[in-house]
Length: 298
Image (cartoon, rainbow, N blue to C red; front, side):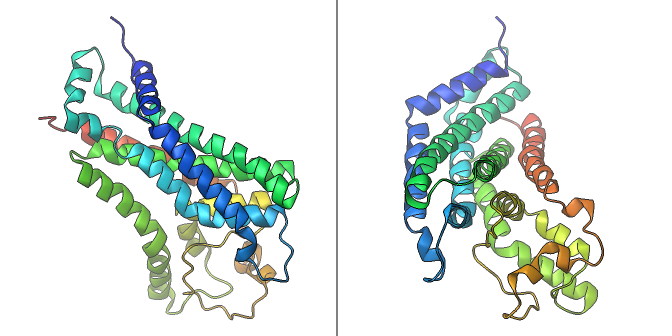
């Protein structure tokens, strides 16, 4: 009998459909997009006319928290769930290697996340045209691509955490803890490091390494890509006003080209954020597999 990771992936996706996990994720994501688009005007001043690009930027602002949540929910039980139920031993009784299992589970959960996000964005395309008019096609494609990419990134992170741990609680703590760290602690730590090195807070102009460290956060990378696609700023949530920047500073003064002395380094170009997201999706899986391969499965 020949068995490969493709068989694991197929079974995992089919199980997600049968268990209604896929349908649940689609329902939740569509509901989020509908509510976000209906309330997008509330995210801007009353006198501003909200167009399609601005509405999508508002959705992305909220989506930086919601899309990773969808992905983490899809992936964090991928391997550890089989381990705790005992079905992992059944899988290993077939000619599957541990690499086959991790790879198959990763592909299966990527398909689950990708399908849920694609269906949701298809619904959103209809709603955004109805409410705000037709967006620029290239801008909308970039918006969707960035959203799906960050979803797949956090799915990889979740599957890696699932492979690395032996209990549901540890898998949840590792994946959700990592996400919370990106949301609440990443920028304060980077600003604190900048202050320790330079003796001052980053201002309108700052060292290029500061912006590099900021952009190594996958949520920041997502905001960069989405903002570039829509030509609109996607604000972080929550916003930490830790930089020494006057509140009256015009938005154009805060563009990256005006904050870095000289030319913008290649590693701060928009395309570099794609590499950041891909790395965050792959490295946790590699580390999780390394831990899984060496663990005692009881």
